Image 1: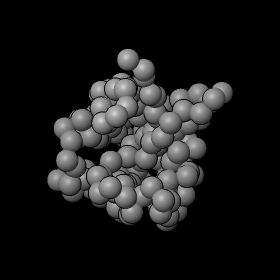
Image 2: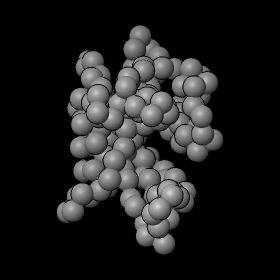
Image 3: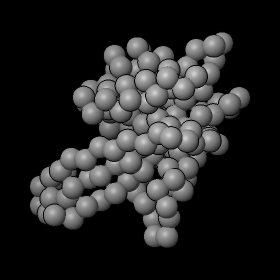
Length: 140
């Protein structure tokens, strides 16, 4: 089975002492994190930084020491199945207003951990945010 690799990040900022996560809602209506396909010659972190900038308009800094993955089969009618592999970093931004790339993102929400968890549809998305949030809490 062919593997399709994507990279992105759990993106956050700090507002009035609270951590707020930049959650994107895709044009299809699903909530998650900015990510996209690795282009030829790119490293995983370069892909993540490019995709975050494209989808949110944000200039971010990757937080050292955090990376997590997700993997699942993607089956579409009339096409061979592929394995989707996603690598997620943790990225922080300061003093910027997110701007959605309207061709792919319908809106960007800045949410607390609890509010983000409440809108996620997939257990894998909840797991990724939980891992990132716990990492931040342990490394304040």
